[in-house]
Image 1: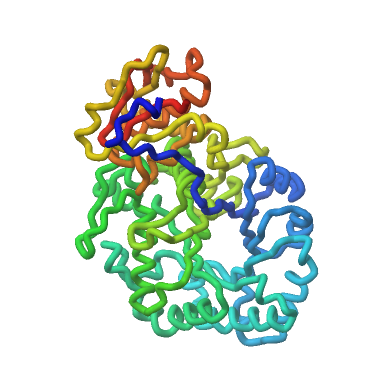
Image 2: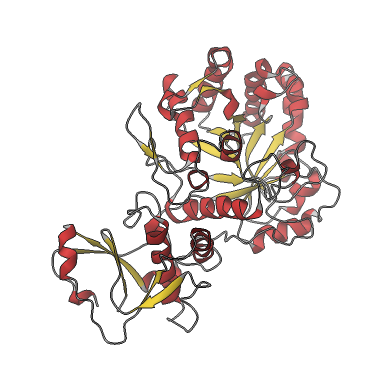
Length: 464
């Protein structure tokens, strides 16, 4: 088929991108969770290669031994003061909670506290001394090159987050805590941990924030008036606000890891946006983006941002609104709350579907579209938008369609419409399943065509 294309066309073959990694937060504020051994089996069965703990529980750490799962352990906030004022306490903590499990358990990061700046105990001044003492304990044991030290910050540490280019840290934190912490991270070769929840921003501002923008769905985007960059996802905007705040302190060279993000599958009546469909869309689209084309941002297009989803299980003993107990990917009986794929697809299907980028646009009229027996699958533009979106989420998730080319910055991202993106995904699914009967229907959201489809500068064809 490729031989039929005129020389004015550029064939872009899809390849597996250098992708980021997905981890999960394994919280245990519940009385009905499976055993750590069962949890490790669950992680392995879903190809989840990173896990973050909120403590250093010995049973959990032993269960993770002799696996390839990389682990982050946490020194809890209640131990922060002791670790800050007593180097011997920090040394003992590392000797008891880290070194005995290495190297069979791959502990690569220690989180010193969690969202310390919002802790009501006013622990901020103890953070950097505690991090320094824990790091020195690692140095004393020659573990500092393999185990890094950091601490997650919440977005509430920002004074300004919109537009992203105006991002800045709160003045009372910037000079006294944030700058010394960033300096520590730079000196030790570590990274900044950031907990970011678009759900909270959407819930509080649903009258002005588009749900599609919050869920990584096709949308017109939002332009930052400060630098002209266009954002197609709220998470990107939040992260770039953090990058801008770091740059203002001259630390924009540091790497960032998203240590918590997620969306609740259930909430109270006033928790706008909470629900299974939205949770599946947010986490599914985010995982797909990380694994297929990396999570990067308009300000940091080359960033390699790893992501930890919150959380592995619904936790029935957490306090607060209903949403707090319903961020889990799985119920305590290990049944999935909703279906998302933790692998990026790819594989054999990449040889079956190619993206054709027309250059210049008017050359599209020269494409030969008649080929005996050749068929494609496209979205039904008359289908209800919600149905199209659900079908798109399925095709790129459970259906394992190759959706790399419709990610931001990729060949077929424009036009950024649900019909165009769904058509690309539906056709990938259709071709990868051998154009079998029933593989181009999606409950009426798609249909088969016999002419090569075209959406803007992107077209589809089966590989020869």
